Image (cartoon, rainbow, N blue to C red; front, side, top):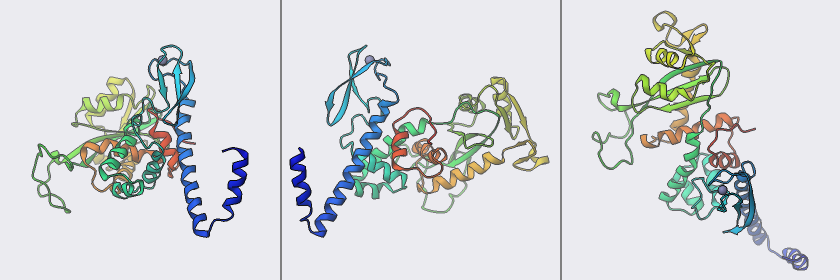
Length: 322
Ligand SMILES: [Zn+2]
């Protein structure tokens, strides 16, 4: 809009009724949110500027596609946009990313989100899981100092799995009769004592090899493992060549005492379960996704803003928010 037309536009604004003003205001607010989400998306390129095809650092701006800046790599000549390499690259309605992020940061249900965004429930559900794809992978690594590690169990939930149901569907509410170990999914959590750095991992089966695989990337070489002394953790310590200490439950109590305890990691298990409760019975196949979601507030000083949500959902790397 040129300066003259804008002047005219400003004059015409004066003649709006109160209702029209409100309408324009809401419209502007929405446009600003859309601008913000596009800015967060473009910033993704700003802090990497590497070609997603060949990782070269030399790219130039190369016009626009669907309202988004396009880049061209000088090394491989391929073009890309900020969302290339993210789960969102093929999404239409990109401006709705910000709104979806807002719904998720506020903990809205899929149904409510679908209404707000004008999407079908199925589509809102798919979007939710696009947001969780990278978040799921983001875990604190190279934990150092004293690291507490312990397992926890999640109730198996085959909701949404139509084929090959392993057992008859459970009635709603109340514990199932004669629950077995196979009704639970094991997970292992490692936590750096005195910090909010944690690494959790769902295990297919609780074996020392699986625990080892889960903890290998979580622990730095100078970590000192504090556990309940289960053979699996002694095995991990031996394999990684790190120090470890443990308590004896019959002597020191269930959570341990003195230097060797798992009280922080057990408190984390409790927070984890409480945090998961608001998702109302997560299907086991999505458990890792929701754990990624639940870890986010620990990095954002408890309150996750829509922009922070979007920022982290666009990155594969674990990053702390300021
Ligand atoms: Zn390239």
